[in-house]
Length: 599
Ligand SMILES: Cc1cc2nc3c(=O)[nH]c(=O)nc-3n(C[C@H](O)[C@H](O)[C@H](O)COP(=O)(O)OP(=O)(O)OC[C@H]3O[C@@H](n4cnc5c(N)ncnc54)[C@H](O)[C@@H]3O)c2cc1C
Image (tube, rainbow, N blue to C red; front, side, top):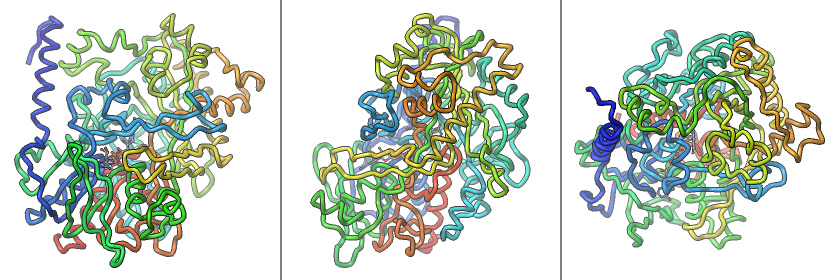
């Protein structure tokens, strides 16, 4: 296919592609809702789409997938646009409760916690970074009393969904799947800072390698859930191919589930209440209700349905049916990102979003193919002892642009105007070339909590992030920053004149330049979430008072109710969770098929 150099034609072609994508979405209006299904899956996110697709492989089962948000569009699938999506209706727009310990540079001391509210869920809002995380993460889950979840046992489920196009991937035991529905590839475009990052990391002694392979401790260009330059959401991967082919799968968008119906005597889930077009409907489930509403909404729905900490439920006027630790064990990855000025070209909206850039995007090139500007990753075990030496605690994320180059980032992170001006105002006016390194803490020890604000399902729950409650987290965050800063001495970074942005946060100035105390103060201010909320319906045996679901993801003490999403992670994995959540959904689908004798 060839395109002219005329930007108008490129834009017309882009719109036409968008229309073709829209046509791939399943169309609601053709479906008239039945009164009863075999399975009802709540939430069409990373897990929900995969699960609904797999369960409906049995033609005898009628499956209903309910999603609070609307359809995915082509604009959402242009990788560079990722940041902008957070400003739209496809984001639940959650915010953490105010704190005096973290998110201090953000408005009202509250961090924005975006979440996808759209077909594909957070796999449509995310930055498409693809990681499997570490073998030891899953071995730890298994050791906690969860049979079936060791790395060796979950590896086939990673391979089942992976459609990896990574040419130099590991070819040994940990090799990727090549034929699964989720495309994984390298970006076809890079900024010079990404090359310098990969080279400088190697110059400092880290090997180049496949961090999804045998050893995670390496540096690499980013593996992305992108295929043919397009975001590969769970919706695209699992549901687009089924359009018109699965009459036993009904998908309903703009459908907010408000409650799971549970018989208080028999403690059996038998259906849900859902709001569609302003009207409440009851839909029954013959076999199971499955919550895949994500780590914020799943605990909210459980609690609204009487499953949660009895004392808290009574406080908001809900009669408890099962007293379980729902909403506890909330975990997230944070990264106090630093800005580095350089003399090589950087990603700027004025260069990225032009008709020329649209043209090269259509031809399979150009900066619009970079997932939100993220370009490379490296993994370090800074605290490694004999047991943890190959289990990283810090990841450095290399981003080809910076906050001062993209106003949208100020909005999406919710940075206070005065702090933005002090730190970034001058560089923003000069549009100085820069990149960022985000040191992400991989195995945080702090735990937060989700609570109900009230028994009204329309209201956002209360989110207590509790970052840095455990001093280990602040300590490792500081060491992560120092690791990133130390790379600037390497020849590859010197060659692009990489230097730390020379601005000190006024509130931290008393600690002196680049001291550990300064960086700790900095981290408490720029507590950037990397959006990996998880753990709020923890998997564990009945004997564990903090467990909500068992190893087959069934809610303890309630029949016919499962949770399949990020909530079940007992410990957040040392990587980005979108891939691991696909794995959880694939494994859950097999377990459900086994439990209902369809193998
Ligand atoms: C901005 C951002 C960037 C990220 N970047 C990355 C990344 O680069 N790499 C990575 O691996 N991970 C990333 N993540 C995290 C990853 O995308 C999520 O962990 C993952 O998508 C969560 O999957 P899930 O199935 O648990 O929930 P979700 O995908 O969030 O799905 C939940 C779905 O349930 C729906 N829902 C909720 N409540 C109801 C209700 N009551 N009724 C009906 N429907 C409901 C929601 O609208 C949503 O569609 C990012 C996340 C965000 C938000």
